[in-house]
Length: 501
Image 1 (cartoon, rainbow, N blue to C red):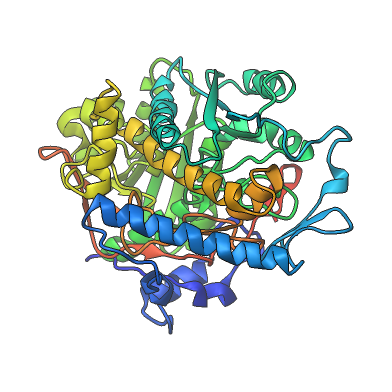
Image 2: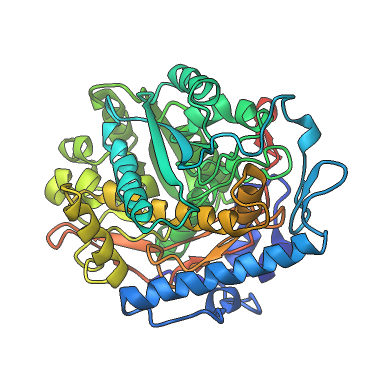
């Protein structure tokens, strides 16, 4: 049986109070075909749509779309509806309101800008077990170099300042302080759920833009309490629920099933664990028993953890590693194995596992892999790969391509902010980000990418269901994509009381 799901904004009435994920009712309603307007949001055509079969058409569409957003925000600012008002509040769309009086006394809207630089600080991991993620920063830098060559930011180049925190939250805190106090950055970005949560409150208290965070933790969708932070990828909580939905549809004759999960013992793994536990508790007719097994992110081997899972003998296995699982014999017995969306990269995660990666499933977050043979000939993917090659780097590294795609999103936001009344500033950047709706050629067709004030705080709310072909080294999409644009309730982040509220 094939899972074919399309969700739309019409599902708003089926939200759960906790926020940060799609409600189970909304998912089930869409799967059953009972959603009245399913697919309408995903099929909306922009007036700017151009020939997407060429890089020239894609860039022309980006120009048109950017101009339309600039004109719309400018009109609102000129009318006095948006922008910084007489009470020193930043007002934007759909309930967006940030009290700038709560910013530090020495806060500067133009901080991190010089005549020739836009200073962008990032903390990330470039060493240790997760050093491969450093390729995201490499790809972003390559795309920023391309944009700098175009001279489209009022004479400023993007000065990308990267700090390697080794995925250690204490080091992230130290580097964020350094980037704010010494490097004088205009905006910040980071990678990793535990790292982001360690500096989340501080960055928002400092009133520094913190966009497109590099993890899918649901906390990034909190425009009310943490308005300076914006999400990028699909919420891990929604991803976990979609695993359960896949099981219910595809293993209908074997329900209820047992499920085991191998998860990192940190905020990243816990977000997945809690999301799937919530699904299992609400659907005992689908999941009879769920065993999460946590592991130290720095552990050199996971033999004991995999042995524990093998002894549990699950029907379905969800794991953040593939290679160590093969020797246990577990893959020969289970009905399905899932890897998280953040482990979708072929070169980094699937290729090293060889044929052991064959037939693994992913709720992939709707992102295209620039090393996937099935995507390489697409015009923008080819453009990115050529850009990486021209920079003397390896286009065969998935995360480098993903980084370049993320660079596209940042530079579109920068160009919008720079063209608004008053020019580039932190407040204009936040207006650009909270009014952000673009065609993203690195995201699968049928999935909208959008941020809209306090109404829609999750940039990507859609996904593919894909299965890996190890022989061809490609992900094969099975069925239609999910698109839930605007359907994920915001997360009022409250870690002390269990997370999203």
